[in-house]
Amino acid sequence: MSRVWNFSAGPAVLPEEVLREAAAEMLDWHGSGMSVMEMSHRGKEFTSIIEQAEADLRELLAIPEHFKVLFMQGGAIAQNALVPLNLLGGKTTADYVVNGSWSAKSYREAQRYCTPHLAAGALAGPFRGVPPAPTFQLSADPAYLFICSNETIDGVEYAEIPDLDALGRPGVPLVADVSSHILSRRLDWRRYGLVFGGAQKNIGSAGLTLVVVRDDLLDRASPLCPSAFEYKTVAANRSMYNTPPTYAIYIAGLVFQWLKRQGGVAAIESINIAKARLLYAYLDGSGFYGNCVEPEYRSRMNVPFFLKNELLNELFLAETRAAGLVQLKGHKSVGGMRASLYNAMPIEGVVALVDFMKEFARRHG
View 1 (cartoon, rainbow, N blue to C red):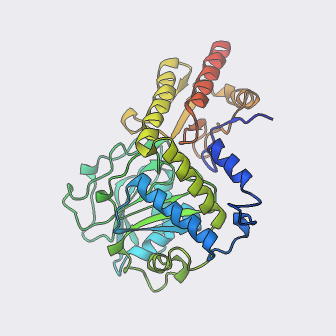
View 2 (cartoon, one colour):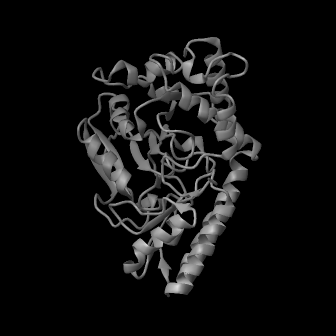
View 3 (cartoon, one colour):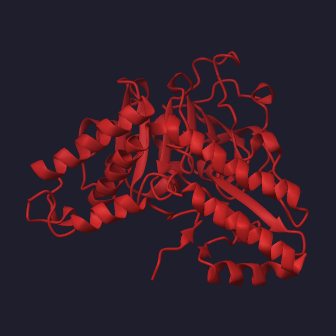
């Protein structure tokens, strides 16, 4: 069976080169006689894998030395709890900007550990854009400001990350859930205190969560934070305090090397821009389909769209599956359709989708 064009929001498409390399090394990694899944996480073989993965990630994202890279478990949802447990530092308030389903979930989880303050946005949708940074209303002494910089469900992305220095709050760390667009665009580390993301969208396979945290934030953890999830402990043990998700780290390392071969983040960003423009341009001009997100806040990674005649939804999904275009059904909370255009989705897949959509509209418009 030939491979399909997989537009899943996550777990998502991986580069075919990576899958073939992993398959070739499944039984014997570099002459070790073992699969990576069978290795001791403290052995020299796996140590070389995780060290190379961190080095490649640091190179790709130009991560400064005063940030620690942590390979953790639990997914981005777990970080909604671990961020306040690690960063409150005795404070009782943290600020949240809510511009989509995931940041709303983050806000509600924070209520278990502190009194979150809604600095901008709303807890209920529909979500069509991002509140401009100058409109943020920060509390008097927040432990941090939290954003989700790309909302996978709603298709909303920050065109520019808030600059807390420019807002007159230079001492407030910015925390960002970057799960669904990490490695798709460059990051200005001067604006961040911590970023985190689940791997299963743009990094690799499910099971790994990436956390990049500034050194000066490592001494704020609550005594109630489990030691296996305390950033300072994980950093001090080079992500080896407990057994890390070894195979997921290996896959992520292969993806990092693949991305370097593509020319790095700057090169893939230009491709991502081209892919998104192609699909949005067709949606805007079709008259048959639509997208409700304000153009300046449209996500490059996750493109929700709808058929103006919703009676055709099930037929559209059946025909796309038959044509080898899969995982296009929108999230159950918002309905419609969604195409995720992560790094590993080549532009040929987007061309195939647009060509199909044109033909479907011709037949049913």
